[in-house]
Every structure is written in structure tokens, then in C-alpha cells.
Image (cartoon, rainbow, N blue to C red; front, side, top):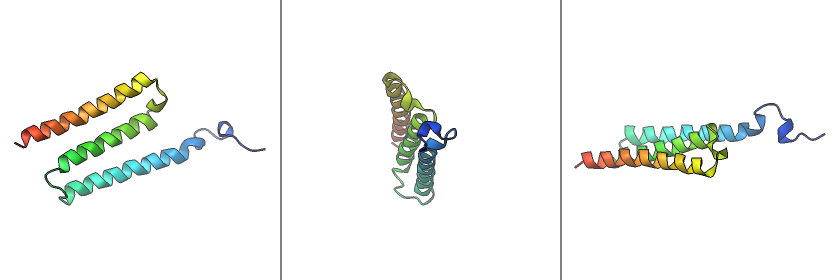
Length: 98
């Protein structure tokens, strides 16, 4: 008898995706630390870190909080909130850099 995803033990059908998302989050964290610590793109590092943080927030909200299963309106609102937060941080940095 072949097991279907519904017959597997709890959570094992999606463990591959969870591990991939977790690895992506770790990779993005390492990239943001390297950008700041190594001084890469010194003038744009804060903006790059804000964009990376927005990508990480999207991954967490969509995959771990399962907003990907939510209605379209909620997904749009989550995306708008992430964009607004990142844009506010970037605009604040640009205004303060003058």
C-alpha cells in the first residue's frame, strides 16, 4: 500500500518545505550580517538589510504562519504591511542621510 501525504505522520509531508524555508531564512541572515560587518556597499547597506528583512518577514508570514492559505484579501494586506514597514525604514534612512 502506498502512503499518501494525508497518511503520513503529522507534519512530515511538509517537512521538506519547512527545512528549505528555514535554510533560506538562515542564508538571508548570513547575507545581511555580511553586508553590515564587511562594509559592502556602505552607503546602501541599511537599505539592503531592510529589503532582506522584508523578504524574511514575507517567508515567515506566508509559510510558517500559513498566510498562504488565507483569503486573497489577507494575503494582500500582509504584503502591503511588509512593504509599508520596509519603505518607512528606507525612507527614514534616506531622509536622515541628508
